Structures are given as structure tokens and as C-alpha cells.
Length: 57
Image (cartoon, rainbow, N blue to C red; front, side, top):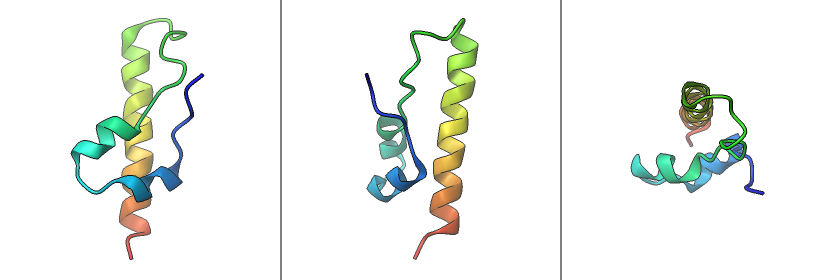
């Protein structure tokens, strides 16, 4: 099973394109439809971006 995306994974982002590679929904196949999977991905990306903005040093 794939690993869940955490805020700490934001340290691996160097470019904006890295965000697409890091954010992984491990339950993508279990979602009832594609729109819910997209919504979850958007939440993961938002959490990572907030972490980067607030913990950028």
C-alpha cells in the first residue's frame, strides 16, 4: 500500500512540479467516484502548501 502524504513531506519540494509527485492518495481506488479523489488530492496539496508557507525558514 502507498504511503500517506504528510506535511513533513513538504521538505522534499524544491519546485512546483514536485508537488504533483509527492501528493499521493493511497485510497484512490477505493473512492466512490473521481470527483472525491480529486477533492482529496486538492486537500493534501493545500495542507502541504500551508506547511511550506508557515514553516519556510
